[in-house]
Image (tube, rainbow, N blue to C red; front, side):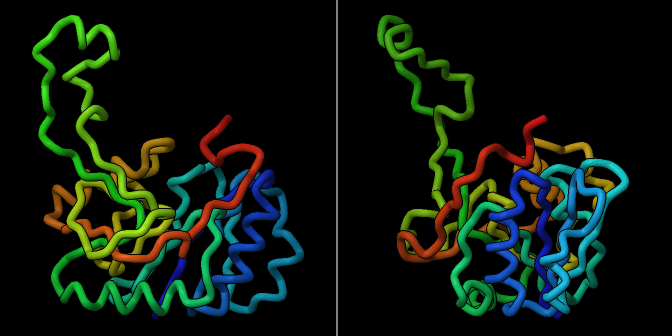
Amino acid sequence: MIVANMATYPPREDAMLAAVRSLAAQVDVLNIVLNEYREVPAELGVFPNVNPIIPEQDTKDTGKYLPRVGDDDIVFTVDDDIGFPADYVARTLERYDALGAGPVMAGYHGILYRPARYLRSDFLRRLIGYKPDYIVNSRRVMSFMDALPEATVVDDLGTGVSVMRGCDMPPFGDVRDAQRFIDTRIALWCHRKGIARVCLPREAGWLRPVSHPEGIWQD
């Protein structure tokens, strides 16, 4: 079964509904975790395969891992503020299947941490505010908006545009306290479990962000 998991909250409702209209027809089940909602939006009732979930507590971005899935399911974790094309699932499955049967998580937003190049000049360090112990100074970001010509092994994946087998998905209890840094927690999970992380190829603009007033991680 092909499953997609999304987490959202009321200020994102318009963007969420747009994503649902695109994704619902592409998957067997679309789970939507409705943080801060008191009732399910009526607009979701027209989608028979949408499974709305109102959690007891606000899960923020970790809510994508709240719905239970089967080990043999193919699971997409999706953000509510991205414009997904009509061929998103089909093309992603083609690219994912091409990676082989090993334990692997894939997606379209990746980070590769490169060995730091240290500046010898103290003056230059002060001039540009460079701190060699900051890991962000040695990272390469492969944004989901940009082209990537070939599949690339990365250290970190953005969980809003990811795909995995159900057996490689962490249980919610292992990530529930990772609000605001879920991508890093998932990278740690994969590292410990020996799951490769791969950023998938695509053309520029195939995925695009949707403007919104605020983020799901904000208080």
